[in-house]
Image 1 (cartoon, one colour):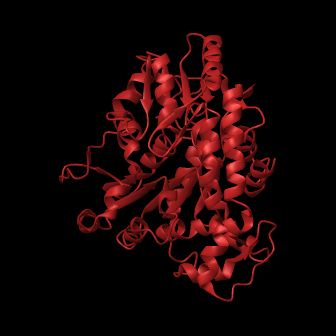
Image 2: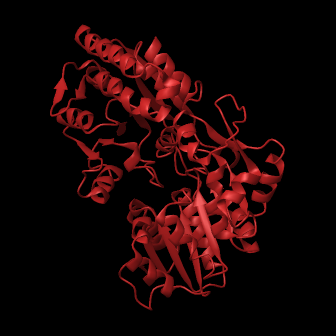
Image 3: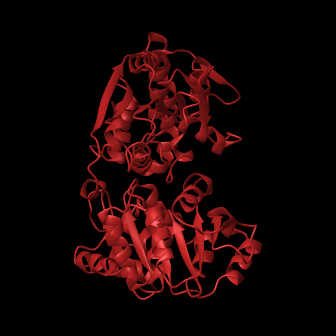
Length: 447
């Protein structure tokens, strides 16, 4: 079992008790966790993780690097060393009670992709936090940290150590955070019923400047942080922007929809960022030559599809991941690429389709990033095309790391399809953190 320096450091760090490994995607957190377990004084391991990681990350690594016997809940017997369960099961009272009664202090508990419990109000989070007193050896793993703001650390850190932050989320928030507008100016809240309204306007909680050092010093007590550039000498990432023009027909639909949006959203501040975001997504569909009408799909162009086929012809016989946001996009692409699999919410046998791509049975994988967010490794592939994107930096970053991680031997190439003078340009700026979301929405509606 070859370990990198950062993995050895993480294992040593974990000897102090329950800790967090905040390692970027692709740094081998699963293997580190298994080594921490096998070197601990615990005889059993409970792993709570996204469903897709059970067969595509944990089981292969358990079989390859350990002699542990394992089972996937609800199949449980006394002979196994490792029990694997997905987060969705932890919502059910029936399943949660079984797990709660199963574990004791002979167990170690791992939360993989621990940002899944970032929402302190969620039923999953509340149930999982009840497990924290059952054992003194807990480990959380994530490369995503707190994708929205630092308040999301509370439940994750509280799971491993109740003494780092106050036991009440609201006390924690009041001590370390202020509600601020997009310019960082503090907002005085006299009526807490108004907080949801402030959220819609794009306001958020930010760390108090006078508490920031204290906050991160507390995290350092239990968190082992690592970035890829610190740990690995990986091949270069190459980002290539492919700009194209919409056809006259596509331009007509786009401009009609944009003008309609301006009427629908006359005042972005009053309307709210969240509501505006849902509306402008129609523009993103149009850049792909269609949009979802009330009872039908209207199709009126193939400019982006034709551009994609030109790129794939240039890439040649290499395997490629094509990232899309909509089922209609995936269907159009699949019709032109016989040697392909589609991974989206409707995929029946996701594990088999993923395996077919990894072993080279198919050349192309057409996938929605939200269905492929966690822990999957495709080092068999060095090319990815972003056919369409959403505004999420988290999703964009994770999708890149599917091919750029431990095991990557060749440079990685990322092609970004961008329809000129459209929402595609603004989304590209936001996910590359060159523009704030609120500013991008304003420019889309007013340009």
